[in-house]
Length: 614
Image (cartoon, rainbow, N blue to C red; front, side, top):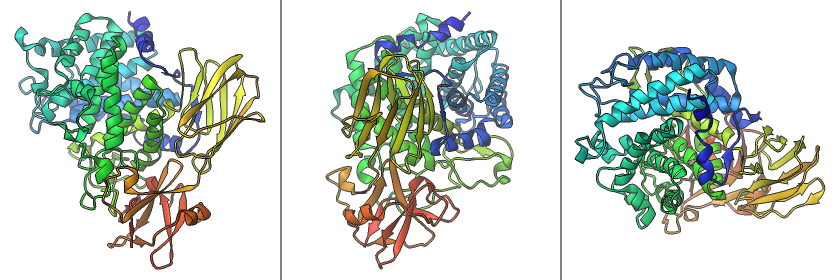
């Protein structure tokens, strides 16, 4: 009944977007980023026991009553990432696990149509609507990959009952309904109002006007109980860290809802609100490793304060990293602005990859692995292995957390966003990955060990005549060489280079990006920064860090750019890592730096990526 509608549910993306994702199964990679994703699949996503634990939480309505908890988010959040992962890997064993847990979850729906970990008596408090949102999202993303039409129909029927129960209670107060933004005491309603996104997805699948009406109800007051965030973003006269609420993850999620609404009913005002919000976050909140917010999980002008030595605790959360990457991919498809994909790549190789634990005790946590770090230090600190973001018990032996559930979505998005097409199926190459990319116009075989080196070679197979291929030239690659066969092509940093020609089988594209080391100072992020005794070293998209065990932070002699350019990569490393370099230490010794994602991954080790000058 719903199969055709599900298949066509994103057809309207052409109303607004310049670029579109490739179909599931279009990419196959073997590289640094694919290793991260494979580890998540094996440690988490194929663990049927963990999925069962999450479903069973919904068989016990009231499990979240006592602490107004968010255990309700775990299943749907992990399901979204698992569906993204399947789109990249096509792993049949994974698909079987996902189908099994979806079938299991359908049996946990109560007689009122609810999927909830809150009792009826305590419902609509705390994080209840946030959890119901994630049930909708998890199921909706599974519908995109579901191969069983009868199961898909059962899912949609269940989601309709789940969604209708909510809208029977919430809506315009003049209709005698509850105010959605007041259904929680947290963040002025941001968490509850982020439900706009899955309601738009449900509208796209069913065409039922009531779901669009509910999204427009949320749009009418703008995502919080007191301030219209969408209007505020459009007006663009306030820094996001000065908004009345500053919770990064939930706020970005609300703007994802606006983006999905805007695809159905395009509006220049809403388009500009999305772009202006994204640009402010990019300028004001992105730290050097690609994550946002150096005060817990909230906006706090992180671009400026990332070097503040007093901010060494819970900061730069993995939930925020993943949500930011998803939003960057959304904004890139809308605008084609290279800055969003440059930022996406920075997050992928630094904050996202760093989230993956290298050491896991199989006996810890009741035998349920927790493969993700929740937070990212900037200045001489541990990775807080015992600090679990969104910590909640899930049985008498084990606990789980929000960042552990969301992380696979970030790793999978790195595959999904690696390449895309425009409406005419012209090809756009965003990330440089080793492997193959199948597009409607050709298959591209990529040979590279990027980002260890900047050389990438593509060979075209079975091209379909004339079309264009665009390649991202990152802003940091000032000197780039680009050839099609033996013909040189001009390539400017910070742009996409488009090659439009009649392609033949065996044609090659050879790209060489500049991979010299770069000195970065706090003033490169915010000119007004008063921090002059910190510096960072970056190569390509990769940030480096000092790794060590001492109580006192190491100090460095002033480093000259020419010294760095001469040093290059080292062949020895102090700890297991992807990349390592040697930098002069204050006392004349040589310090070995490693890529940020590998630093402080050993128990007891600390790191600094903003390093201290003597």
